[in-house]
Image (cartoon, rainbow, N blue to C red):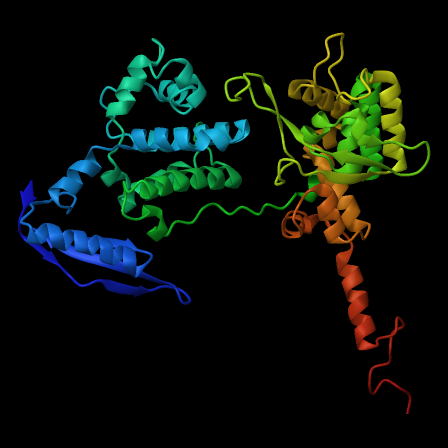
Length: 467
């Protein structure tokens, strides 16, 4: 339905928190009110001028969208599926393989919430499989020349015709429903807060790309008041092992998988990430006979799967996390770690310039994730008590890194130095490890006593002295 009964009102200025403002364009079509809100007055005036020009030229307005018919037809011709695919293709060339997987995972969840109908819909599991393995995997689509394989073709055809048009996606109720869908796992349980935050960020970026392409006049999420699950980001102190427990776990690894003792030792004594340990080369290690050594980190090796890397290999060498491509990071190696690594080089390192840690056997290959996770699981069973095994204590190998950073902070190493060694910003370091810094309360109280001039011994209160 279309109408020529159009009234366009003046722009409304909205005072937001602080000094921020937003600007709302208001108009009516056949008596039905419409409004679009923008972050700047220039954007609002630009959109309002389009409405005024269309009205003066005698263009009919669509009663459903409130837009001039040419704009409504153009907007209705684009649906969520097309925008999501375009977003993936734009991000793909510069994204790491792990980021590609993360984008595909998030868009799969979002797309299931943006289906226009359930009539004739395939099972949710079939939709997820088709979206994750083909639609949102540019490499796979390119290999197939954009033609889905026979077993996926019916699902893809249904999806291309049955996701919401952008006009409906931009509806506040639809945005809110989609955000709510991100908080629920496939099994119906609540999703982790960091998972919700990650998927919301991808959804936001995809809609921002639609605005960039002028498919949408403004970002529809900017004016939605929606509260995500709280994400503390702090490390749980219950996962942090003490030095005695760490050495017990390393001893258990040495008994079963001696070629992996140094792997886990790098994580505990030098706070390396697993991907950094896998990438570590023998010639990047300074291991003197006595005293401290150095690990000169030059990159990380991500285990991503063959379907997501440009090389078609399951491993992908990348730069250090949050660093430029050629950036390096130097981490000190304590004498105990130096001793372990020197023994590892003698017994297990086959190439003086190659990777420090390789899979056992004749074929040289980096240690796989499944291998080191299995070794860690067996070490926990051997080194920890039944009660400790049921607890989150050192549940993941990554918890050794948490233990290392916590140990450094508790030892009084300045946060700036710890952040440099661990590859964090100081802000993130203190935010993540705040709850693991032990003994700070007592030290703070002593500083206050010193500032007040209070002696360690109890002082007599006024009126208590003998008269």
